[in-house]
Image (cartoon, rainbow, N blue to C red; front, top):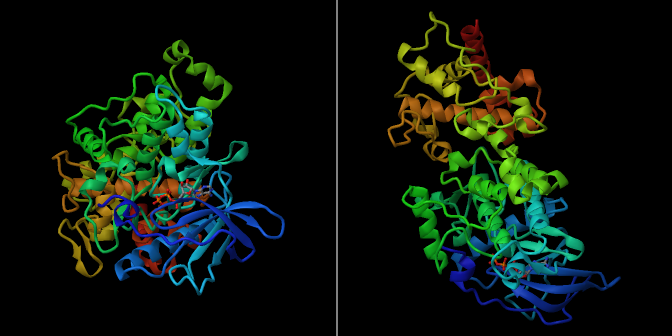
Length: 513
Ligand SMILES: Nc1ncnc2c1ncn2[C@@H]1O[C@H](COP(=O)(O)OP(=O)(O)OP(=O)(O)O)[C@@H](O)[C@H]1O
């Protein structure tokens, strides 16, 4: 992965003169330039309304640059137009620059946005180190809420960092710069291999970059949020030591490999420390339990008068923290960590994810499920505390997917092994089910445990989308063959996978008897 093409590509950015008009907007001074565009102050000719106009040129670039930029611009325009949330910067208009005398800018796209007073990067630079910057909690609340909205809408930001958090007048906090924002199809999405070294999760370094770019998942934003929260609460200190971004990223990778401990700033309040530690869980699968929604709920709690009282050092130590993220994590990944034992419930996904007892849903003795697989399936199912993901359900899925054939293969659709994983998708979710230190879609314990984790996540997405509870097994089976978004968008089981889903339901009925 390269760092931001912005920094390394050093595209020479042409500028439009002061007074230049784009539709009904007149440009004023340049606020700043990023890798892909220049942001100007602007005012509406009609009524003097102040705005910021980001001009994204697409002409006058080398062919390779144009392809990359065109993609980024398309993403930014598309997301900006769709984003509608108090913590996402608002785009009022998307215009085209008409400047025949300036070929480099003629035809450029201009996004007319709310004008911020500063970026969080500037606020961090202005603050002294050694404690939270002014309005730290309010800023983190806004960032977490904006991120939760994005993830809820099926988007990943992909480039969360202080420069992309804007602070408006009257205390507004907006996420901005959606050039790398990308829509999730299934479990993850692809963005060009850009991003910012200081805020990318450790797994970026071991991911292969295919033609589609680098895989990006919501958990990458969660990692970035952890880094950003540490910076905001310590006056700008990065959680990993190092004088340069490269050194800090090497330190983060050493931590992820287990060769260096996580050493957060000693001055951090205990509750915030835990929250940051949760965001900085070294691997993607472990981080899955801390969703943006659960972090946001947790931060709201910390920011509430009761929460603030608990932030007093003594009280913070004395009171056991109620962690919404821990609840969400327990819900997704099943018991295990101590956190899962903490106070459960209260308006979180855990409300709909009562743990099922280990005895429930075992596979009938006289079924056709191979003996050797039964304990593997039961163990995998118990990784998920959502009641619908039972051993019988996983067994029915495996029978429909591969007929329990560990060597099954459908090369035409790039699907292999007992759970018919597509290798690239498997990598995004992989669980080491047999504990051999390797995650292999051809290993039944790995493939089945990963299936359990994935259908567990699908189950929760469908519950969040208020889909009928009685349809959840069918929806999970359909989501496994398509994606969560496809099922949600189509409002149920897509017709093309109906025969497969019917098979799963038939097998399930037989195993549940
Ligand atoms: N709506 C806005 N209001 C005020 N300033 C803004 C606005 N949007 C961006 N800026 C500022 O304009 C400058 C350029 O922003 P831009 O998004 O183009 O690049 P960047 O985020 O700095 O870098 P990159 O896009 O390469 O990651 C930054 O200083 C940013 O804080």
